[in-house]
Amino acid sequence: MASKGFADRLYRGEANLNIVGRRNMWFAIAGALVLIALGSFVIRGFHLGIEFAGGTQFVIPASVGTQAEAQSAVSRAVETAGVAEEANPGPAQKVGNGPDATYTVRTAALSQEEATAVKDALVADLKVPAADVSDDRVSAAWGSQVTQQALLGLAIFLVLVLGYLVVRFEWRMAVAAVASLLLDLVLTAGVYSLVGFEVTPSTVIGFLTILGFSLYDVVVVFDKVQENTRGITAGSTQTYAEATNLAVNQTLMRSINTGLVALLPVGGLLFIGAGLLGAGSLKDLGLVLFVGMGLGVVSSILFASPMLAVLKDQEPRIKAHTARVLARRAGARSGDVARGERGRPASATATDEVPALAGSTPRPGVRPAAKRNNPRGGAGNRPSGGQKRR
Image (cartoon, rainbow, N blue to C red; front, side):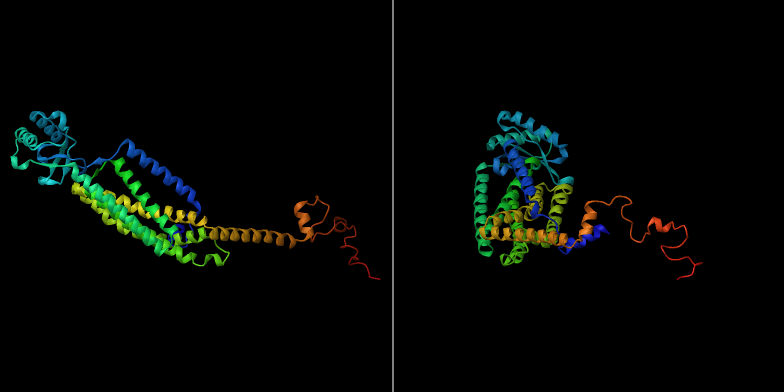
């Protein structure tokens, strides 16, 4: 019953979770995660795909054996072709399932003659038709162009978002929203670095996609914040941070539902498409979308709104309003205490502070011992039933 009650209050926006009030804790967690991500960038780096790093890629049928055997076959072919020192084959990756599955092995950039020699050596070693083995040479210059265009697109996107939020809300909300977007990017990139997935053009597309989703959720929350805080300085019952916390609680269930609806198909893309069906090209896009959208929902609740409250608390008008609200509450509490002291009887106060000695004061309704022990059997000075009254 308790869990149903909480779920109902959460659905109605009445859970009253103190999210903004614990902003220091959320900021500390976010800072720690950012440090871990930056450390992974420096120590592990990124596993760049062939589109960014350049090189030559050989595709052979999976029927030749395991992935390790496919990599060993490419290494032997490279040695036979006489380019062992410069090729340095990487691990084999499986693409697809069933009889059409293939292994992809990437080497350093080879000339057309060297690639042909390695391909011929593979055909001879694995005893497969030449049509089943293919090679593809990609220049790193193409990946560099993709990176530059992606960074340019990201910069244009952030500028447009900043301008829209300034016009739609105010500059403090714009700063908090953009900070939340950058946090999503850094943490998602950190997960990519830690897991070791290849960074491909699909990854870049995924990064740009999660920005739009994260922005949508932040705008929904900020729109409710703006509604709750409109004209807030005219009263003295609620601070800006408290109104922001109320807005977060009121939109919390909507953010959760939106995130779940968005993550279900992305999870299918990642776990079913890439995991079960072996569509290796989907895992790069699926991972960045799954992680980025999940972080977008969390950051819009636990980071963007508390960041907005911090920025607004620095505004003189809001700072004076907060001080006025807190002073009124302090005065109300002290007044309640004073009224409570005045309303208590002096005898009650003395009794509370100094307990009566045992036997010094009879309890209400209890007769004195001398009268209870009247040897004549009467009650007090009342004559007994056998005597006549004078």
